[in-house]
Length: 533
Image (cartoon, rainbow, N blue to C red; front, top):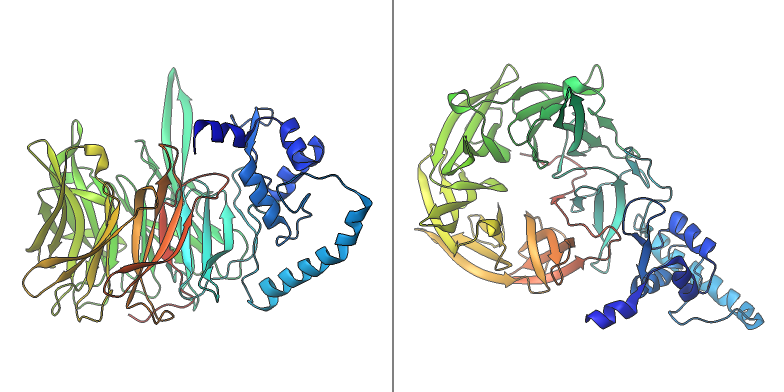
């Protein structure tokens, strides 16, 4: 869109917006407050200068009838009310009843939700529109720093939003059974910044806690936010984290395991107190020094009853992260404390949220796999690395040589994409923006097909290999999420579902369209019930 087109599309006052909608300014303000009329403010204050885009107002008007909002008009064209319009009332009533029948009766549980909650969320208090429902193959997304949502596939293969909660600040999420009952819950680590004065100094800390969302419950079910003893406080500015749900102590019930920048933290649900409690938090690791924790996964990599915790991390020196000095740390939990069982030294720096365990090389124990970056003569190499559980390197695959430190973005997942016996690796890369699939050919890791993310400029934050029980046209299914950028603008909502059958093919794409204009930080697959291990 050219500069002149953008200017023509812009309305920069309540007066202009009211004139475009053919209503009063007071009505516009009421529609914004009650029905989510897409109005923007230059600053957050209510008296700040406002603006809106004509095309977004038109889209809001078109969605108004199906959302049972009294739309001020039925097309972008302005018109004056006349007596002849009263003849349209029966037609509109029939249209509303037909839409309601299609959305509610034809597809139970897929009632279309408004673009914002029915009631504005109170400051700092999360509120959901309805009680949580979670089905197999639902997609759960978190859009840091605003909200978490659930998406469900309809009969016409379009994913619709069926639940949301906001405001919440989850940079990652996990789905699993945390209360030792049948249904699974959604768990997300939250973070907020706390600033206080100590003498003449202003001290800032970052407080981490967990929120748990349960089937049939409205808003959050449990939170540790109000108990400082069940929270973690970081001094450094780093808001991102990652979470896993697993049985790491061999006792009944799963634990919730979280990494922040420097802490490995274990939570568990106390069935007697009916609350989540922090069991342990570990800050120092090798040589009793802190490390920059990058990713976490929990998996049973040996033959005992409990699952192990695997963490990828970078060493720290006096200047910050040490170049080409990474570690894979394997923990076993005894007496609620994570003991280092094995450590693997890596001559590279590890990627965020990209540590996985899978069976790419068929037979024997699974492999430990991650994406990484190595600085070599002022050039960053993007890598895929794999080890066996004893720490022996099995493969190293170099993807790209990038000279710019800022573009080191590569995320991966491991799972079944084909009918082959072993699992495959899917890697999402930024600059160039693409998905690449890798497989083991018996002697080495081979590159398969690629899929260019050519809709616009992307920055992937997560890729996920999902089951395809309900999709006969796909041998595998990939969920990709992150941010899209147009013309150097801010990150927009990006969520795409792709099928895989000898190559990628796009099944569904949702990009942008959100009033807040933020990216998807993480995605997971919903489960109604715990899968058998």
